[in-house]
Amino acid sequence: MNIKRVKSKNIKCLNEIITLEKKIFGDGGVNIWFLQPLSEYQLVYQCLNPSFVAYAILLKDIKTPKKAYLFSFGVSLESQNQGIGKEFLKKLIDELNELGFNHLELTVSPKNKVAIYLYKKTMKLVSSEFIKHCYGEKEDREKLCFEL
Ligand SMILES: CC(C)(COP(=O)(O)OP(=O)(O)OC[C@H]1O[C@@H](n2cnc3c(N)ncnc32)[C@H](O)[C@@H]1OP(=O)(O)O)[C@@H](O)C(=O)NCCC(=O)NCCS
Image 1 (cartoon, rainbow, N blue to C red):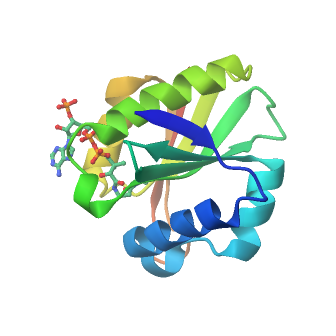
Image 2: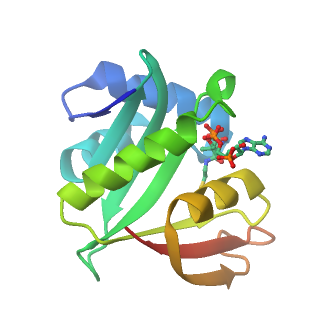
């Protein structure tokens, strides 16, 4: 498995991510107007195994520059539950360490037991906060911060 940083000129790879995000998150997925600038000014990765199977979008926290925020993370539907998410996350942690980050924050639906289990199993949890109605009525989120 390899991870590849996707640069802003690589519209083909950005569109692969958009197509996969839409399958996973429906209307919650990003479009090219968001992802192209995110790839230019933030961090966008593809996971290749050997073809494209997963992606991650990360932001630098402007309040705490050594903290990265996991904006989106997903494995293609046909590749889930085969260890890809775990291996990809470990490679991302190595990459973030090399870039100088020491914490990773994210929010996740409290119902998403697989993602919460994966994050807590792979990284050291340092804080958690339940945010009721985070994305509006009944859209609660769990905010988790991990040490890298
Ligand atoms: C959450 C997600 C990234 C996990 O990736 P994955 O490749 O499916 O997970 P893995 O196969 O690496 O499994 C990680 C662990 O979860 C367990 N797991 C995976 N899928 C599971 C399932 N459906 N039910 C129970 N356990 C499961 C695995 O057994 C493994 O545990 P182990 O290491 O103790 O054996 C992936 O399912 C996904 O993309 N989901 C949709 C998008 C999403 O929810 N993203 C996160 C938003 S914050």
